[in-house]
Image 1: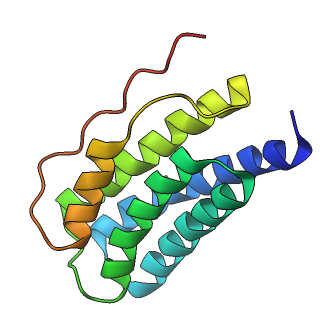
Image 2: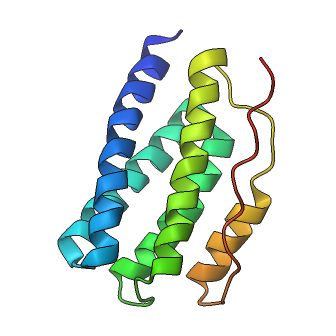
Length: 139
């Protein structure tokens, strides 16, 4: 495995562990410092994906970042439903990362439904519950 990709997987795994904890804190107490930290972590993941040529991962992270940006800018309230949607995007990112770690490539698949829900939420539209992540493709 490429050293850069390996380092990305390690650092992103650590960031995702922090994100899980920070999102729980955010839901309980939506303060700007917590929100800024979450936004920064997702932004870093998105940017690195673009650099490494991981478009599927980049698109999911970008859609999540858009919602977080609206929270940060005070354009959308932090609600349990919104946090659940962000958690769904984090779960999808984890699933994609796991596949990359095992196969050194992104899995095939379509995240359109999740991305559409994130984008709709960023636009202030009501969305249904986030879809569960698709099962990983067979090895």
